[in-house]
Length: 482
Image (cartoon, rainbow, N blue to C red):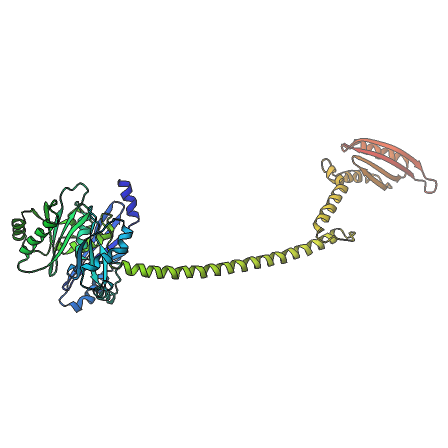
């Protein structure tokens, strides 16, 4: 379970800011989602003397020092909304998203086209609490924030934020046997909601009057008439209520239910111990707003959902068109690249072909005709023929080279004056020397010099005779290399 929760944390926005905007005050809470869970990073609050000063207050609140976040969720006072409990024949979220606004239409006096509708998590009995907000109120709220340079990603009502806070706390577990009531004293109104397990069963917004305690008691009577089998066993008190001891005792006396002052932030990790030292009650609603998506315990509520869905479709169409254009451009560039590459390759091939013909004719000038397209094959054939013809050079390289043999012969013959070499032939290891000397004695000494050399295994005098005209001795000698 811990591993699955840590995996879910990866896909949540890291920094979420919840902002509550009222006529007289502004409050925000920044939460950070880490692998260990959600923690409260920062809180800010300012009082507003005049409503028209809220723009400047908002701007300074977010700029000094700079507040960085991934998601901004704002809250509107619940007195501007409408809460209705509606029975639906199914619980599939997709179907409910499509028909909820039409199910809400009979219960509100305003034309449904002028109202934005969302809903809180459905209960086990197949009913949901639908929440409506007039579009003009949302428009005014967004204009106020945009004038301050802010663009909220999500907008909800205070009581929705309170339920998110309830869902993120230790309450709302599947094993709860009885509902829990939450009384929220807001600015000019009191919100009462009854939550059972992880769903909202009942919501009522009361104007703040002198007889508010009696109105609270009447609200619980109304709920008991609707749900005879379920009675809240606990009341959580929060917000700007009157003195603690007095209000808790009066509510307990009139309802017969135990009342506890609720401090939900005590169950959430904070980065600083001083985060909630100064009037922590004013941060409950913005904290709940931030936890609307920071926790996985409640359905994400958003009055801008319809607006963003239309905008997303338009953006998707634009992006699709842009992608098509980019694909055509990419295909054109690729085609041009391939054409240019082929042209360059053909040009290089022609240059190489001409160069090869030039080398061929230079190396083998006796070649009279070159077959077009077969130049390389002809060159390979010519090279093979030349290698065969000059194979004896490679064979001689295995032993003493020909130059070495010529050096030995030249060295031995240079010792004798009037000795001339007329012919020299080499066939493998066999060599034949023809020349003339002054006398027979010189021929015998030359043979003896070759025999003493370590380069020859055999030295044979094939013939020697005297010429009549010059009186010299012509000799024919055969040598065999070792």
